[in-house]
Image (cartoon, rainbow, N blue to C red):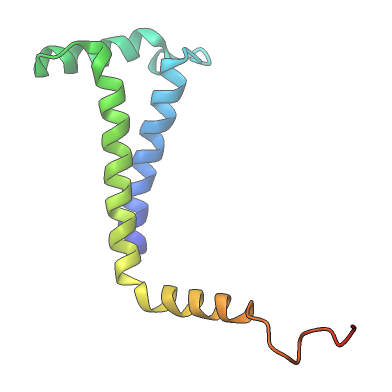
Length: 105
């Protein structure tokens, strides 16, 4: 499962980094992170899909969020027993008992 998470989140992290740097034109002297490259990539995608280029970045961000939530839900489903045990232990400690209450009036 760790491999799945690594193979999922490393490329997604790189894509988010590229989207952030290129959309804000923080190129650091590299053409790959420039706004020209960003506009070219989304222009090609827009031409292939037949949609306006301005509508693609929000769609990509929403797809990344949804897909990441699905992967995290699969991970949580596979680890549901340890997660539930942790939550039960955590919230059972917070309950007040008569021994832990102060005897002051």
